[in-house]
Every structure is written in C-alpha cells, then in structure tokens.
Length: 157
Length: 297
Image 1: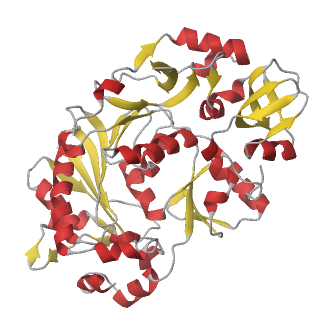
Image 2 (image 1 turned 90 degrees about the horizontal axis):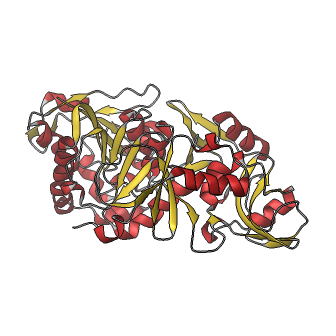
Image 3 (image 1 turned 45 degrees about the vertical axis):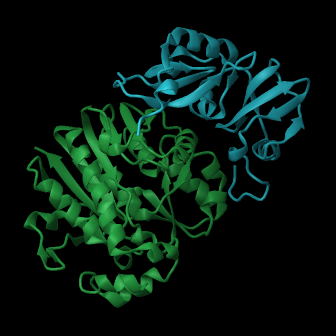
C-alpha cells in the first residue's frame, strides 16, 4: 500500500519564534516552556513535536495539534493546553468544583473573570481542564465532544 | 472453547486455565506519568474510595476494584490509560530510553505506543506505524489525550516500511488474539489452523522487516496475544534461522511466565526458543500473551 503522500508532504517545519510569540502574547508564558519542542504546519494547523531530526518518511501526524489558524484569532487545542497551559500567567480562569464539572460536561456558564475576551485556559486548582471561550461574562467550554464527561462521571476533579 | 483443547498438552494445569478464562478480566490501568505522578494519582483514587493495587512487576500498572475505569475523570484528563496487564509487558522489556529512535510497527490503538512515549519522557522519536486508515483515529486520539508529543504517525504496510535505522523496534503483530478471550469470547470462534497459518505469513514478513530496520546491537520485541505456536515460536524460529539476531531471556520479577515450547506437532524447535516467554491467564490472573526479545547481531 502506498501511504497518502499528498497529504503528508505538507508538514512544514516552521520558525519556533513565531509560535512562541503567539502563545506568549496570549497567555504570558515563559519561552522556556517550549524548549525541546519543534513546530510544524499542515494546512491550517500548527503541530508541536519533539525537537528531533525526522527521518524522511511520509507522516500522517507529527506530535499533537497545538493551534488552529482557521479562526481569527487562532485557537489553542485542549490537548496542547493540557501540556503547556500550566505555564500561563494570564487569560486563565480558575473554576470551582461545580463550575469545573459544568465545563467538563461541555456546558456554557455565566461567570465573571478578569481576562481578555477570547480563548482562555480553564483551570481547576493546579489542573488544566482545557480551552474555553470567554466573552461578556460567559464561559463557553470548547472541549472536544469525545473529551466531555457526563455529570455522573465518577472520581473527584 | 473446544479449539483450545489443542493446547491441553502444552499449557500447564489446563483445567485451571479453562476455569480462569471463563472469568472476566480484572480492570487494569497504566498511570500516565506524562501528565501526573504516580503518588498523586494513587492519592486521587484513594480519596475517591477506589480500591487500587500496584502490580508487583510494574509500579505504574494498577489493578482497580471497579468495573468501568473509562468513566473516571482521570481517564478523560489523560492521567490513566486502560490497558490489559500483560499488554504492558512488551514496552517494558523493549525498555526504550529518552532520546532514542523507536518504531512501533503495528501501533493502533496506541496503548503500547503511549507507554513507550512515557518511558522516553516525551523525548526522542517514536514512529507509530498503522496501515489501517480506520484505526488512525483512536491512535491519534490516545496520543493527544495522554499528551504524547514525541510520536509521529505513519501509514505503511509494515512489511514494506522504508529503509531506516531504529534503536528499538516493537513488532506487536496482528494475531488470532486467543489470549483476549476473557474480554470477548467470540475471538475463539474465529480460530483455526488455517487462520493461524495465514497470519504466520504476515507475522514472518513483519518480523523480518523489523530486524532489517534495527541497528546492530538494537532490540526487537516480537509479541502476540495468542497461544498458537504457529504464530509464536514458529515465527521467531524462521527469523532466527536467518542468523541476524540472537535471543535474550526476559526478566520481570513478580510476573510468572512459562518458557517457549521445545516441540509442537512433531516439530522440534531449537533450544534458543525456550528463551521466549508465554504468559498464561491462570498464572497471573491476566489475559494470554507471548513475548520474544531479539538482539540484532
């Protein structure tokens, strides 16, 4: 079988500085948070990957999707926030236990937070829950459907 | 079940074996240290009142006193991964180090891939190969949920994987899956000698390619979740005969194994094959597995 080379050759290594600057500007993260990682672009997505020399193969994925450029402003993925988000010093929303459960179930909720409108990092204590969209007193959970949980999910947050 | 009668002479305490596989598997998970420390995870489970028991042979493997660990929030957040206990063995004995280049030839759904990523502390490169398009989604989803960032996914026919040199290769090949019958009894209805021999051709070609892709001195792990010697010792023997690898015995104190077979259906295997490990369900209350460790000369 031949791999789907038409798609995979579109993974292009990109300048780390641009990615880091975007995340620093939105979330005020120290540059050290990104040491050891390289960044690739395919179509409208930026991928974060271990900083190694990639053998010349045809790839379906390199590391994880980190941000989508489809929307303006760009949107961080929940999985990347769970890796890098703990370094953020702004645009984070600390939720209480009840709010965190609602966020995890994919709900929108009214709450006041001292953040800029746009994509924010939802936290519960020191855990990164994922990406939220905040505007005018409302937090909309951006958790992908397969990452949402129903309210009867067992285990404490 | 009847098909398993062919193993009466090779599986010790066969009646115990039959009794054990009629019972469901205990729930088991691996702690994902890419996202949480072991102590913290155990503390969370204790706080919620979920009984948990660390495996004697692997400090990151846990048996849980509950039916559906997939419903735990710890699963959603990627702190744990549901994985059958003996399926944690191949990555453990592959023993990849941070910074190395590793190939997981038949990777989906990614349980072993992500265990390898975790052993490598997210550094270096794990190439996770999976020819089936439909199985790429769960593979990617597990890598993302568990925060594995050193994994690159390819979609080659493993037996024609392009030339490359890896430090370690895992060939956890497609097999008749008889050892998973505690999860799904139906797998046994599909078992037949013909099926095993068909799979054997694929398994031999995958293992040969795995050997070719490994650097001298590098490690190849061959594993299946079946009892069929046609898919186990016979496959390893045909690759040993090429003279490019030698075998090494596995050592996992606390996990009981049986040595590879000396003989099957009148065919005498070479002595070296006794260095293979057979894991039977009644020995450790797990599924069934076969693992062989090869070193490239």
